[in-house]
Amino acid sequence: MNQQALSAFIWSVADLLRGDYKQSDYGKIILPFTVLRRLDCVLESTKAAVLAEYEDKQKIGLNADPFLLRKARQSFYNTSPLDMKKLMGDQDHIKENLFSYIQGFSEAVRDIFERFEFYAQIDKLVKSGLLYQVTERFAHVDLHPDKISNSQMGLVFEELIRKFAEISNETAGEHFTPREVIRLMVNLLFIEDDSVLAKAGVVRTIYDPTAGTGGMLSVAGEYLEEHNPEARLTMFGQELNPESYAICKADMLIKGQNVANITFGNTFSDDGHPHLKFDYMLSNPPFGVEWKKVEKEVRKEHEQQGFNGRFGAGLPRVSDGSLLFLLHLISKMRPSNDGGSRFGIILNGSPLFTGGAGSGESEIRRYVLENDLVEAIIGLPTDMFYNTGISTYVWILSNRKPAHRKGTVQLIDASGFWQKMRKSLGSKRKELSDGHITEITRLFGHNIEASEGKKPISKIFKNSDFGYRTITVERPLRDENGKIILGGKGKLKGKPQPDSSLRDTENVPLSEDVETYFKHEVLPHVAAIVPDNSPHPATAPDIALPPASLQSSLHPCESPDAWIDHDKTKVGYEIPFNRHFYVFEPPRELAAIDADLKQCTDKILRMIAGLSA
Image (cartoon, rainbow, N blue to C red; front, side, top):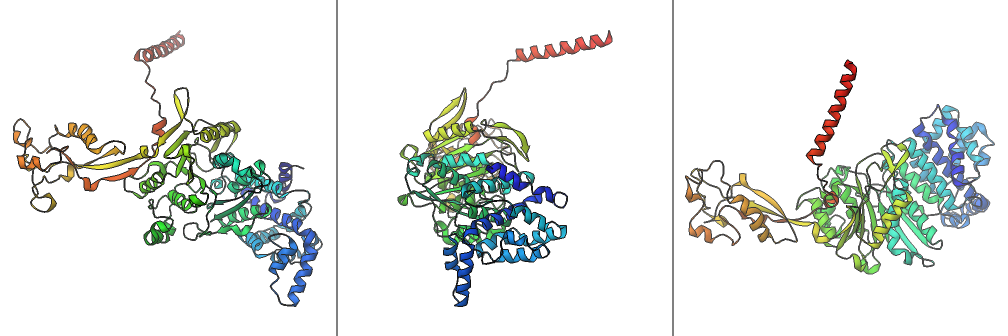
Protein backbone atom coordinates (compact mmCIF):
# COMPACT_ATOMS: atom_id res chain seq x y z
CA MET A 1 0.00 0.00 0.00
CA ASN A 2 1.13 3.60 -0.57
CA GLN A 3 2.27 5.95 2.17
CA GLN A 4 -1.11 7.60 2.73
CA ALA A 5 -2.92 4.26 2.86
CA LEU A 6 -0.36 2.87 5.29
CA SER A 7 -0.53 5.92 7.56
CA ALA A 8 -4.36 5.69 7.48
CA PHE A 9 -4.13 2.00 8.43
CA ILE A 10 -1.81 2.80 11.34
CA TRP A 11 -4.03 5.69 12.45
CA SER A 12 -6.97 3.28 12.55
CA VAL A 13 -5.55 2.15 15.90
CA ALA A 14 -7.37 5.26 17.12
CA ASP A 15 -10.57 3.19 16.91
CA LEU A 16 -9.29 1.19 19.89
CA LEU A 17 -8.49 4.34 21.86
CA ARG A 18 -11.79 6.13 21.30
CA GLY A 19 -13.57 6.70 24.60
CA ASP A 20 -10.54 6.06 26.80
CA TYR A 21 -8.42 8.83 25.24
CA LYS A 22 -9.08 12.37 24.05
CA GLN A 23 -8.60 12.82 20.32
CA SER A 24 -5.69 15.17 20.92
CA ASP A 25 -3.91 12.35 22.85
CA TYR A 26 -4.11 9.70 20.12
CA GLY A 27 -0.68 10.67 18.81
CA LYS A 28 0.90 10.02 22.20
CA ILE A 29 0.17 6.31 21.65
CA ILE A 30 0.32 5.96 17.87
CA LEU A 31 3.58 7.84 17.21
CA PRO A 32 5.84 6.00 19.71
CA PHE A 33 4.33 2.62 18.80
CA THR A 34 5.00 3.36 15.11
CA VAL A 35 8.62 4.17 15.95
CA LEU A 36 8.90 1.00 18.05
CA ARG A 37 7.54 -1.22 15.29
CA ARG A 38 9.76 0.36 12.61
CA LEU A 39 12.90 -0.11 14.73
CA ASP A 40 11.78 -3.65 15.53
CA CYS A 41 11.56 -4.43 11.80
CA VAL A 42 14.84 -2.67 10.92
CA LEU A 43 16.80 -4.69 13.51
CA GLU A 44 15.18 -8.05 12.72
CA SER A 45 17.77 -9.28 10.21
CA THR A 46 20.77 -8.57 12.48
CA LYS A 47 19.19 -9.39 15.85
CA ALA A 48 20.79 -12.82 16.27
CA ALA A 49 24.26 -11.48 15.44
CA VAL A 50 23.82 -8.55 17.86
CA LEU A 51 22.73 -10.84 20.71
CA ALA A 52 25.68 -13.18 20.13
CA GLU A 53 28.12 -10.24 20.04
CA TYR A 54 26.59 -8.78 23.19
CA GLU A 55 27.00 -12.07 25.05
CA ASP A 56 30.65 -12.40 23.96
CA LYS A 57 31.59 -8.88 25.03
CA GLN A 58 29.75 -9.24 28.34
CA LYS A 59 31.85 -12.31 29.16
CA ILE A 60 35.15 -10.49 28.70
CA GLY A 61 33.94 -7.23 30.28
CA LEU A 62 34.38 -4.99 27.21
CA ASN A 63 32.24 -1.97 26.31
CA ALA A 64 30.01 -3.60 23.73
CA ASP A 65 28.54 -0.42 22.22
CA PRO A 66 30.81 0.08 19.15
CA PHE A 67 30.77 -3.65 18.37
CA LEU A 68 26.98 -3.84 18.56
CA LEU A 69 26.53 -0.81 16.28
CA ARG A 70 28.77 -2.49 13.72
CA LYS A 71 26.83 -5.77 13.94
CA ALA A 72 23.45 -3.99 13.72
CA ARG A 73 24.67 -1.93 10.73
CA GLN A 74 22.58 0.95 12.14
CA SER A 75 23.07 3.92 14.46
CA PHE A 76 21.19 1.97 17.18
CA TYR A 77 20.70 -1.59 18.46
CA ASN A 78 18.70 -3.69 20.94
CA THR A 79 20.14 -6.27 23.35
CA SER A 80 16.83 -7.76 24.51
CA PRO A 81 16.01 -11.30 23.32
CA LEU A 82 12.42 -10.07 22.87
CA ASP A 83 10.81 -8.54 19.80
CA MET A 84 7.24 -7.41 19.16
CA LYS A 85 6.06 -10.79 17.89
CA LYS A 86 7.50 -12.57 20.95
CA LEU A 87 5.70 -10.06 23.18
CA MET A 88 2.43 -11.46 21.84
CA GLY A 89 3.21 -14.87 23.34
CA ASP A 90 2.79 -13.75 26.95
CA GLN A 91 -0.36 -11.68 27.41
CA ASP A 92 -0.20 -11.80 31.21
CA HIS A 93 3.22 -10.11 31.35
CA ILE A 94 2.90 -7.77 28.38
CA LYS A 95 3.69 -4.64 30.42
CA GLU A 96 6.85 -6.01 32.08
CA ASN A 97 8.11 -7.53 28.84
CA LEU A 98 7.45 -4.34 26.86
CA PHE A 99 9.36 -2.30 29.45
CA SER A 100 12.25 -4.81 29.26
CA TYR A 101 12.27 -4.71 25.46
CA ILE A 102 12.45 -0.88 25.36
CA GLN A 103 15.24 -0.88 27.96
CA GLY A 104 17.26 -3.10 25.62
CA PHE A 105 17.64 -0.31 23.05
CA SER A 106 20.76 1.84 22.83
CA GLU A 107 20.72 5.13 24.72
CA ALA A 108 19.65 7.41 21.84
CA VAL A 109 16.51 5.33 21.24
CA ARG A 110 15.65 5.08 24.95
CA ASP A 111 15.86 8.86 25.10
CA ILE A 112 13.15 9.10 22.41
CA PHE A 113 10.73 6.92 24.38
CA GLU A 114 11.50 8.77 27.61
CA ARG A 115 10.72 12.15 25.97
CA PHE A 116 7.49 10.63 24.66
CA GLU A 117 6.74 9.71 28.30
CA PHE A 118 6.00 6.31 26.82
CA TYR A 119 6.21 4.42 30.09
CA ALA A 120 3.40 6.56 31.53
CA GLN A 121 1.33 5.90 28.39
CA ILE A 122 1.92 2.14 28.76
CA ASP A 123 0.66 2.33 32.36
CA LYS A 124 -2.42 4.19 31.15
CA LEU A 125 -3.05 1.55 28.46
CA VAL A 126 -2.80 -1.17 31.14
CA LYS A 127 -5.41 0.61 33.28
CA SER A 128 -7.67 0.90 30.22
CA GLY A 129 -7.15 -2.80 29.41
CA LEU A 130 -5.87 -1.87 25.94
CA LEU A 131 -2.11 -2.54 26.06
CA TYR A 132 -2.19 -6.02 24.56
CA GLN A 133 -4.67 -5.07 21.80
CA VAL A 134 -2.69 -2.00 20.75
CA THR A 135 0.64 -3.84 20.80
CA GLU A 136 -0.88 -6.70 18.80
CA ARG A 137 -2.25 -4.29 16.18
CA PHE A 138 1.21 -2.79 15.64
CA ALA A 139 2.95 -6.18 15.68
CA HIS A 140 0.94 -7.11 12.58
CA VAL A 141 1.92 -3.96 10.64
CA ASP A 142 4.76 -4.79 8.24
CA LEU A 143 7.27 -1.93 8.35
CA HIS A 144 10.34 -3.88 7.15
CA PRO A 145 12.89 -1.82 5.17
CA ASP A 146 12.70 -4.25 2.24
CA LYS A 147 9.02 -3.27 1.90
CA ILE A 148 9.20 0.40 2.93
CA SER A 149 12.34 2.50 2.36
CA ASN A 150 13.60 5.11 4.84
CA SER A 151 12.23 7.96 2.70
CA GLN A 152 8.83 6.24 2.33
CA MET A 153 8.71 5.55 6.06
CA GLY A 154 9.60 9.17 6.67
CA LEU A 155 6.60 10.27 4.61
CA VAL A 156 4.33 7.85 6.50
CA PHE A 157 5.56 9.22 9.82
CA GLU A 158 5.12 12.82 8.64
CA GLU A 159 1.54 12.02 7.63
CA LEU A 160 0.92 10.67 11.15
CA ILE A 161 2.50 13.81 12.64
CA ARG A 162 0.24 15.97 10.44
CA LYS A 163 -2.86 14.08 11.58
CA PHE A 164 -1.73 14.49 15.19
CA ALA A 165 -1.14 18.22 14.64
CA GLU A 166 -4.51 18.75 12.98
CA ILE A 167 -6.61 17.20 15.75
CA SER A 168 -4.67 19.09 18.41
CA ASN A 169 -4.50 22.29 16.39
CA GLU A 170 -4.89 24.59 19.37
CA THR A 171 -1.14 24.23 19.88
CA ALA A 172 -0.07 22.81 16.52
CA GLY A 173 1.60 26.01 15.38
CA GLU A 174 4.16 25.65 18.15
CA HIS A 175 5.71 22.58 16.56
CA PHE A 176 4.18 22.21 13.10
CA THR A 177 4.78 24.59 10.20
CA PRO A 178 2.43 24.18 7.20
CA ARG A 179 4.14 21.99 4.63
CA GLU A 180 3.61 24.34 1.69
CA VAL A 181 5.30 27.19 3.61
CA ILE A 182 8.30 24.93 4.23
CA ARG A 183 8.39 23.97 0.55
CA LEU A 184 8.50 27.66 -0.38
CA MET A 185 11.36 28.32 2.06
CA VAL A 186 13.33 25.30 0.85
CA ASN A 187 12.87 26.41 -2.78
CA LEU A 188 14.14 29.90 -1.93
CA LEU A 189 17.06 28.43 -0.01
CA PHE A 190 18.27 26.11 -2.79
CA ILE A 191 17.20 27.90 -6.00
CA GLU A 192 20.51 29.71 -6.56
CA ASP A 193 22.54 26.56 -5.77
CA ASP A 194 20.76 24.05 -8.02
CA SER A 195 23.82 23.58 -10.24
CA VAL A 196 26.08 22.88 -7.25
CA LEU A 197 23.58 20.55 -5.57
CA ALA A 198 23.18 18.53 -8.78
CA LYS A 199 26.81 17.33 -8.67
CA ALA A 200 27.40 13.66 -7.82
CA GLY A 201 28.28 12.90 -4.22
CA VAL A 202 27.69 16.44 -2.93
CA VAL A 203 27.38 16.66 0.86
CA ARG A 204 25.77 19.60 2.63
CA THR A 205 24.61 20.38 6.18
CA ILE A 206 21.33 21.94 7.28
CA TYR A 207 20.29 23.16 10.73
CA ASP A 208 17.05 24.16 12.46
CA PRO A 209 17.42 25.68 15.98
CA THR A 210 13.65 25.41 16.54
CA ALA A 211 13.23 21.99 14.98
CA GLY A 212 9.73 21.22 16.28
CA THR A 213 8.74 17.85 14.85
CA GLY A 214 11.42 18.06 12.13
CA GLY A 215 9.21 19.17 9.24
CA MET A 216 11.62 21.74 7.82
CA LEU A 217 14.56 19.35 7.87
CA SER A 218 12.46 16.62 6.26
CA VAL A 219 11.19 18.77 3.37
CA ALA A 220 14.74 20.00 2.70
CA GLY A 221 15.91 16.38 2.54
CA GLU A 222 13.09 15.47 0.15
CA TYR A 223 13.94 18.40 -2.15
CA LEU A 224 17.57 17.38 -2.41
CA GLU A 225 16.77 13.71 -2.93
CA GLU A 226 14.28 14.61 -5.65
CA HIS A 227 16.83 16.76 -7.50
CA ASN A 228 19.87 14.57 -6.86
CA PRO A 229 19.45 11.10 -5.27
CA GLU A 230 23.23 10.87 -4.86
CA ALA A 231 23.43 14.04 -2.76
CA ARG A 232 23.64 13.81 1.02
CA LEU A 233 22.05 16.33 3.38
CA THR A 234 23.21 15.92 6.98
CA MET A 235 20.59 17.31 9.36
CA PHE A 236 21.10 19.08 12.69
CA GLY A 237 18.53 20.53 15.03
CA GLN A 238 17.53 21.51 18.55
CA GLU A 239 14.12 21.51 20.21
CA LEU A 240 12.82 22.65 23.60
CA ASN A 241 9.47 20.83 23.79
CA PRO A 242 10.07 17.21 24.96
CA GLU A 243 7.29 15.66 22.87
CA SER A 244 8.24 17.57 19.70
CA TYR A 245 11.87 16.65 20.32
CA ALA A 246 10.95 12.96 20.58
CA ILE A 247 8.95 13.12 17.33
CA CYS A 248 11.75 14.93 15.49
CA LYS A 249 14.43 12.55 16.76
CA ALA A 250 12.28 9.54 15.85
CA ASP A 251 11.70 10.98 12.36
CA MET A 252 15.45 11.45 11.84
CA LEU A 253 16.13 7.92 13.11
CA ILE A 254 13.55 6.46 10.74
CA LYS A 255 15.20 8.32 7.82
CA GLY A 256 18.65 7.00 8.65
CA GLN A 257 20.03 10.29 10.00
CA ASN A 258 22.41 10.45 12.97
CA VAL A 259 20.08 11.24 15.87
CA ALA A 260 22.98 12.57 17.95
CA ASN A 261 22.67 15.67 15.72
CA ILE A 262 19.25 16.45 17.22
CA THR A 263 19.72 17.95 20.67
CA PHE A 264 17.31 18.89 23.45
CA GLY A 265 17.24 22.19 25.31
CA ASN A 266 16.93 25.95 25.03
CA THR A 267 18.85 27.28 22.02
CA PHE A 268 19.72 30.56 23.77
CA SER A 269 20.95 29.30 27.15
CA ASP A 270 22.19 25.85 26.11
CA ASP A 271 23.29 25.80 22.47
CA GLY A 272 23.38 22.13 21.44
CA HIS A 273 25.88 22.77 18.59
CA PRO A 274 28.13 25.51 20.02
CA HIS A 275 31.08 25.27 17.62
CA LEU A 276 29.42 24.11 14.39
CA LYS A 277 28.76 26.10 11.21
CA PHE A 278 26.25 25.05 8.55
CA ASP A 279 25.65 25.39 4.81
CA TYR A 280 21.91 25.99 5.11
CA MET A 281 19.54 26.84 7.96
CA LEU A 282 15.77 27.08 8.40
CA SER A 283 13.70 28.23 11.35
CA ASN A 284 10.17 29.11 12.36
CA PRO A 285 10.64 30.42 15.92
CA PRO A 286 7.61 31.16 18.10
CA PHE A 287 6.12 34.59 17.40
CA GLY A 288 6.38 37.27 20.07
CA VAL A 289 7.53 34.96 22.88
CA GLU A 290 9.43 36.62 25.71
CA TRP A 291 12.95 35.49 26.65
CA LYS A 292 12.83 36.48 30.32
CA LYS A 293 13.65 32.92 31.48
CA VAL A 294 17.04 33.07 29.80
CA GLU A 295 17.63 36.82 30.13
CA LYS A 296 20.55 36.41 32.55
CA GLU A 297 22.49 34.08 30.23
CA VAL A 298 21.75 36.11 27.08
CA ARG A 299 22.74 39.45 28.65
CA LYS A 300 25.91 37.89 30.06
CA GLU A 301 26.95 36.65 26.60
CA HIS A 302 26.08 40.02 25.05
CA GLU A 303 28.08 42.03 27.60
CA GLN A 304 31.08 39.74 28.05
CA GLN A 305 31.58 38.33 24.54
CA GLY A 306 30.18 41.06 22.29
CA PHE A 307 30.65 40.16 18.63
CA ASN A 308 32.70 37.11 19.62
CA GLY A 309 29.40 35.69 20.90
CA ARG A 310 26.02 35.48 19.21
CA PHE A 311 24.35 38.66 20.40
CA GLY A 312 26.94 41.40 19.86
CA ALA A 313 24.76 43.42 17.46
CA GLY A 314 22.14 44.18 20.13
CA LEU A 315 19.34 42.79 22.25
CA PRO A 316 15.63 43.20 21.44
CA ARG A 317 13.06 43.93 24.16
CA VAL A 318 12.45 41.01 26.52
CA SER A 319 8.85 40.62 25.32
CA ASP A 320 9.88 39.30 21.88
CA GLY A 321 12.88 37.05 21.22
CA SER A 322 12.39 36.67 17.44
CA LEU A 323 15.48 38.67 16.52
CA LEU A 324 17.61 36.65 18.94
CA PHE A 325 16.95 33.62 16.73
CA LEU A 326 18.05 35.69 13.72
CA LEU A 327 21.35 36.55 15.46
CA HIS A 328 21.79 32.92 16.56
CA LEU A 329 21.49 31.75 12.95
CA ILE A 330 23.95 34.41 11.75
CA SER A 331 26.47 33.06 14.27
CA LYS A 332 26.11 29.61 12.68
CA MET A 333 27.02 30.79 9.15
CA ARG A 334 30.12 29.39 7.55
CA PRO A 335 32.67 32.12 6.76
CA SER A 336 32.21 33.38 3.20
CA ASN A 337 35.75 32.24 2.29
CA ASP A 338 34.72 28.73 3.36
CA GLY A 339 31.68 28.61 1.08
CA GLY A 340 29.34 30.78 3.14
CA SER A 341 25.74 30.03 4.14
CA ARG A 342 22.15 30.90 3.38
CA PHE A 343 19.20 30.67 5.74
CA GLY A 344 15.48 31.36 5.88
CA ILE A 345 13.54 32.37 8.98
CA ILE A 346 9.83 33.10 9.46
CA LEU A 347 9.10 36.20 11.57
CA ASN A 348 6.03 38.29 12.28
CA GLY A 349 5.85 41.98 11.36
CA SER A 350 7.41 43.30 14.57
CA PRO A 351 11.11 42.74 13.67
CA LEU A 352 10.66 44.86 10.52
CA PHE A 353 10.04 48.13 12.30
CA THR A 354 9.77 47.85 16.10
CA GLY A 355 12.20 50.05 18.01
CA GLY A 356 13.52 53.52 17.17
CA ALA A 357 17.07 54.53 16.30
CA GLY A 358 19.55 53.19 18.85
CA SER A 359 17.21 50.50 20.17
CA GLY A 360 18.25 46.84 20.21
CA GLU A 361 15.92 45.96 17.35
CA SER A 362 17.13 48.84 15.18
CA GLU A 363 20.77 47.98 15.88
CA ILE A 364 20.17 44.37 14.81
CA ARG A 365 18.53 45.56 11.56
CA ARG A 366 21.43 47.96 11.09
CA TYR A 367 23.91 45.10 11.53
CA VAL A 368 22.30 42.78 8.98
CA LEU A 369 21.76 45.54 6.40
CA GLU A 370 25.12 47.30 6.72
CA ASN A 371 26.83 43.90 6.48
CA ASP A 372 24.78 43.14 3.33
CA LEU A 373 23.30 39.91 4.71
CA VAL A 374 19.62 40.29 3.72
CA GLU A 375 18.80 38.91 0.27
CA ALA A 376 15.01 39.13 0.37
CA ILE A 377 11.93 39.42 2.59
CA ILE A 378 8.69 37.81 1.40
CA GLY A 379 5.36 38.86 2.89
CA LEU A 380 3.01 35.87 3.23
CA PRO A 381 -0.81 35.95 3.29
CA THR A 382 -2.60 36.18 6.64
CA ASP A 383 -4.30 33.06 8.11
CA MET A 384 -1.46 30.78 6.99
CA PHE A 385 -0.58 29.24 10.35
CA TYR A 386 -2.47 26.97 12.72
CA ASN A 387 -2.27 29.13 15.83
CA THR A 388 -2.30 32.69 14.48
CA GLY A 389 -3.85 34.70 11.67
CA ILE A 390 -1.31 37.55 11.73
CA SER A 391 0.90 38.66 8.85
CA THR A 392 4.17 36.75 8.59
CA TYR A 393 7.37 37.24 6.61
CA VAL A 394 10.10 34.96 5.31
CA TRP A 395 13.57 36.52 5.63
CA ILE A 396 16.31 35.06 3.40
CA LEU A 397 19.85 35.93 4.54
CA SER A 398 23.22 34.99 3.08
CA ASN A 399 26.89 35.91 3.44
CA ARG A 400 27.60 34.73 -0.11
CA LYS A 401 25.33 36.95 -2.16
CA PRO A 402 25.75 36.64 -5.94
CA ALA A 403 27.14 39.77 -7.60
CA HIS A 404 23.76 40.97 -8.92
CA ARG A 405 22.31 41.01 -5.38
CA LYS A 406 25.14 42.78 -3.59
CA GLY A 407 24.10 45.95 -1.79
CA THR A 408 20.40 45.34 -2.35
CA VAL A 409 17.33 43.83 -0.69
CA GLN A 410 14.39 42.37 -2.61
CA LEU A 411 10.92 42.76 -1.09
CA ILE A 412 8.19 40.46 -2.44
CA ASP A 413 4.57 41.05 -1.47
CA ALA A 414 3.00 37.58 -1.73
CA SER A 415 0.06 38.47 0.52
CA GLY A 416 -2.29 37.95 -2.43
CA PHE A 417 -0.85 34.54 -3.34
CA TRP A 418 -3.28 32.12 -1.70
CA GLN A 419 -6.21 29.80 -2.19
CA LYS A 420 -8.95 29.03 0.30
CA MET A 421 -8.65 25.72 2.12
CA ARG A 422 -11.50 23.26 1.86
CA LYS A 423 -11.47 22.91 5.64
CA SER A 424 -9.96 25.34 8.13
CA LEU A 425 -7.44 24.01 10.66
CA GLY A 426 -7.38 26.25 13.71
CA SER A 427 -6.48 29.73 12.44
CA LYS A 428 -5.26 28.36 9.11
CA ARG A 429 -7.77 29.19 6.38
CA LYS A 430 -5.46 29.81 3.42
CA GLU A 431 -2.73 27.87 1.66
CA LEU A 432 -0.16 28.36 -1.10
CA SER A 433 -0.75 26.40 -4.28
CA ASP A 434 2.07 24.84 -6.31
CA GLY A 435 1.62 27.69 -8.80
CA HIS A 436 2.04 30.32 -6.08
CA ILE A 437 5.24 28.68 -4.81
CA THR A 438 6.61 28.50 -8.35
CA GLU A 439 5.88 32.18 -9.04
CA ILE A 440 7.41 33.43 -5.77
CA THR A 441 10.47 31.25 -6.38
CA ARG A 442 10.75 32.66 -9.93
CA LEU A 443 10.60 36.27 -8.73
CA PHE A 444 13.28 35.58 -6.15
CA GLY A 445 15.45 33.42 -8.39
CA HIS A 446 15.52 36.01 -11.19
CA ASN A 447 15.80 38.91 -8.70
CA ILE A 448 13.35 41.03 -10.70
CA GLU A 449 10.82 43.74 -10.00
CA ALA A 450 7.25 42.94 -10.99
CA SER A 451 3.70 44.30 -10.78
CA GLU A 452 0.19 42.98 -11.14
CA GLY A 453 -1.69 45.79 -12.82
CA LYS A 454 -1.01 48.92 -10.80
CA LYS A 455 -0.01 46.98 -7.69
CA PRO A 456 3.71 46.22 -7.27
CA ILE A 457 4.58 42.65 -6.18
CA SER A 458 8.38 42.68 -6.17
CA LYS A 459 10.64 45.69 -5.57
CA ILE A 460 14.41 46.00 -5.15
CA PHE A 461 16.01 48.53 -2.82
CA LYS A 462 19.50 49.58 -1.82
CA ASN A 463 20.40 48.55 1.74
CA SER A 464 20.82 52.22 2.68
CA ASP A 465 17.21 52.99 1.64
CA PHE A 466 16.07 51.55 4.98
CA GLY A 467 18.41 53.70 7.06
CA TYR A 468 17.77 57.07 8.63
CA ARG A 469 19.21 59.52 11.14
CA THR A 470 17.09 60.61 14.06
CA ILE A 471 18.02 64.24 14.70
CA THR A 472 17.04 66.17 17.81
CA VAL A 473 15.65 69.65 17.10
CA GLU A 474 16.06 72.05 19.99
CA ARG A 475 14.11 75.29 20.54
CA PRO A 476 15.40 78.12 22.74
CA LEU A 477 14.23 78.62 26.31
CA ARG A 478 12.70 82.09 26.74
CA ASP A 479 11.96 84.21 29.75
CA GLU A 480 8.55 85.67 30.56
CA ASN A 481 9.22 88.54 28.19
CA GLY A 482 9.93 86.18 25.32
CA LYS A 483 13.69 86.82 25.28
CA ILE A 484 16.06 83.91 24.67
CA ILE A 485 17.89 82.75 27.78
CA LEU A 486 21.61 82.14 27.26
CA GLY A 487 23.69 79.53 29.08
CA GLY A 488 26.09 80.82 31.68
CA LYS A 489 28.65 78.02 31.87
CA GLY A 490 29.92 74.85 30.25
CA LYS A 491 29.25 73.97 26.61
CA LEU A 492 26.15 76.20 26.57
CA LYS A 493 27.96 79.34 27.76
CA GLY A 494 26.83 82.22 25.57
CA LYS A 495 24.50 79.95 23.62
CA PRO A 496 20.71 79.60 23.77
CA GLN A 497 19.52 77.17 26.44
CA PRO A 498 17.23 74.47 25.01
CA ASP A 499 13.61 74.27 26.12
CA SER A 500 12.99 70.57 26.86
CA SER A 501 9.22 71.04 26.51
CA LEU A 502 9.68 72.11 22.87
CA ARG A 503 12.27 69.44 21.99
CA ASP A 504 11.36 67.36 18.93
CA THR A 505 12.91 64.68 16.73
CA GLU A 506 12.94 64.15 12.97
CA ASN A 507 13.89 61.06 10.97
CA VAL A 508 16.08 62.00 8.01
CA PRO A 509 16.75 59.32 5.35
CA LEU A 510 20.44 58.40 5.04
CA SER A 511 20.27 59.37 1.38
CA GLU A 512 19.47 63.00 2.30
CA ASP A 513 21.82 65.63 3.69
CA VAL A 514 20.82 66.48 7.27
CA GLU A 515 21.53 70.22 6.97
CA THR A 516 19.58 70.52 3.71
CA TYR A 517 16.66 68.59 5.19
CA PHE A 518 16.70 70.81 8.30
CA LYS A 519 16.73 73.98 6.23
CA HIS A 520 13.85 72.97 3.96
CA GLU A 521 11.69 70.73 6.18
CA VAL A 522 12.14 72.09 9.73
CA LEU A 523 13.08 75.77 9.79
CA PRO A 524 10.12 77.01 7.72
CA HIS A 525 7.77 75.49 10.29
CA VAL A 526 9.48 76.66 13.48
CA ALA A 527 10.55 80.18 12.55
CA ALA A 528 7.01 81.52 12.74
CA ILE A 529 6.05 79.60 15.90
CA VAL A 530 6.02 81.56 19.13
CA PRO A 531 5.72 79.68 22.46
CA ASP A 532 2.33 80.00 24.13
CA ASN A 533 3.79 81.87 27.11
CA SER A 534 5.51 84.46 24.89
CA PRO A 535 4.16 87.87 23.89
CA HIS A 536 2.85 88.22 20.35
CA PRO A 537 5.58 89.24 17.83
CA ALA A 538 3.75 92.51 17.19
CA THR A 539 4.30 93.59 20.80
CA ALA A 540 7.71 91.95 21.28
CA PRO A 541 9.78 92.44 18.11
CA ASP A 542 13.06 91.88 19.99
CA ILE A 543 12.51 88.09 20.33
CA ALA A 544 13.07 87.43 16.64
CA LEU A 545 16.44 89.19 16.47
CA PRO A 546 18.81 88.22 19.30
CA PRO A 547 22.20 89.91 19.70
CA ALA A 548 24.74 89.62 16.87
CA SER A 549 27.04 87.65 19.20
CA LEU A 550 24.34 85.00 19.58
CA GLN A 551 23.69 84.81 15.84
CA SER A 552 27.40 84.39 15.12
CA SER A 553 27.60 81.36 17.46
CA LEU A 554 25.03 79.44 15.45
CA HIS A 555 25.72 76.94 12.65
CA PRO A 556 25.14 78.39 9.15
CA CYS A 557 21.99 76.28 8.73
CA GLU A 558 20.63 77.04 12.20
CA SER A 559 18.56 79.94 13.39
CA PRO A 560 17.80 81.46 16.81
CA ASP A 561 14.44 79.66 16.62
CA ALA A 562 15.75 76.08 16.21
CA TRP A 563 18.96 74.10 15.91
CA ILE A 564 20.14 70.48 15.75
CA ASP A 565 21.84 68.93 18.78
CA HIS A 566 24.29 66.78 16.82
CA ASP A 567 25.46 64.96 19.96
CA LYS A 568 22.03 63.29 20.14
CA THR A 569 21.88 62.16 16.50
CA LYS A 570 21.39 58.40 16.11
CA VAL A 571 21.37 56.12 13.07
CA GLY A 572 18.42 53.74 12.79
CA TYR A 573 17.04 51.19 10.34
CA GLU A 574 13.49 50.05 9.69
CA ILE A 575 11.80 48.16 6.86
CA PRO A 576 8.31 49.64 6.32
CA PHE A 577 7.25 46.70 4.15
CA ASN A 578 3.56 47.57 3.67
CA ARG A 579 4.29 51.22 2.89
CA HIS A 580 6.36 50.21 -0.15
CA PHE A 581 3.47 48.22 -1.61
CA TYR A 582 0.63 50.59 -0.77
CA VAL A 583 -1.27 51.86 -3.80
CA PHE A 584 -3.48 54.88 -3.23
CA GLU A 585 -6.99 54.52 -4.57
CA PRO A 586 -8.76 57.88 -4.82
CA PRO A 587 -12.28 58.00 -3.39
CA ARG A 588 -15.20 57.97 -5.80
CA GLU A 589 -16.61 61.22 -7.12
CA LEU A 590 -19.24 62.79 -4.86
CA ALA A 591 -21.72 62.79 -7.72
CA ALA A 592 -21.43 58.99 -8.06
CA ILE A 593 -21.89 58.53 -4.29
CA ASP A 594 -24.94 60.84 -4.34
CA ALA A 595 -26.41 58.88 -7.25
CA ASP A 596 -26.01 55.59 -5.32
CA LEU A 597 -27.60 57.11 -2.21
CA LYS A 598 -30.52 58.47 -4.25
CA GLN A 599 -31.02 55.05 -5.83
CA CYS A 600 -31.14 53.43 -2.36
CA THR A 601 -33.52 56.02 -0.89
CA ASP A 602 -35.82 55.77 -3.93
CA LYS A 603 -35.92 52.00 -3.49
CA ILE A 604 -36.79 52.37 0.21
CA LEU A 605 -39.53 54.89 -0.57
CA ARG A 606 -41.05 52.53 -3.15
CA MET A 607 -41.02 49.69 -0.59
CA ILE A 608 -42.73 51.91 2.01
CA ALA A 609 -45.31 53.00 -0.57
CA GLY A 610 -45.99 49.36 -1.39
CA LEU A 611 -46.56 48.52 2.30
CA SER A 612 -48.97 51.41 2.84
CA ALA A 613 -50.92 50.45 -0.32
